Image (cartoon, rainbow, N blue to C red; front, side):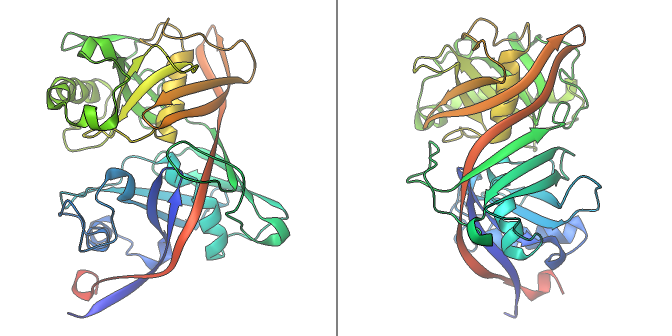
Length: 361
């Protein structure tokens, strides 16, 4: 078998992991691109033993970077979710955890030059059109991964990466509430269909017969739960204008409960066919917006801090995640200025991934 080597940097971004590519090193057309990513990640086998994927949705992701032609942005970020068990690639979602590695990777690739002890990198997410500012630690003009920041779901400490999300309302649908309502009843279940950074369908855990405090393993083992919410998610996708989402990871699904660890709300996030071991960054922004916006299913579950900017703490299976919101609720409804999240990243290796040359001649 003749092989073709494609340069990449394997990085942990937040609580996820992915190869980061220069978009110029990959095929331009998405059909061939999908086949390249399937081969590189070993999609189609649960263990992904014939590729560099990790056998879980959080470790079967891809980031592709390029210089941006946008007047505001420095770098374009194109994300792909590669299915582990199926030979499928979804280019429709985004990933905020993998976004944490975009700034460091852009500097490592030479797409940006360090600006001093901290470097601000303006990123356009081409999947959704969202704008994000990443503040990366670059002491002495070099990227560092060492620091004192911690995030639940990742061992040890690392240098902080501050992510400020802007223009994220209506990321895919163009509306905060794509159905026109803060609450809908679908299949007998009351849900909120909301689109902030990531389209989501959000419900109360008790309505689906669970507490919202279960472990990831307990929820993944509860197949009756998935059989209950998947038809609701699919029906909601149509109502949100996303079409047939039966094979798409968008919209995501989440279950909420009252906090029990001092947070604002307890939540479990589904990707959507398994429970996230912690919480997605884009999902945390959408869930936090659901908590802050009036008349949603989150209303009354927890006390909202009386401060501006407003910190929202979401309790998840591995701990919690904090999001800082600049927002207003006025005559025009919920208006989000920005949402800030602290994440960390680490470079794991720099090299090349090999694929059969016949896939991309």
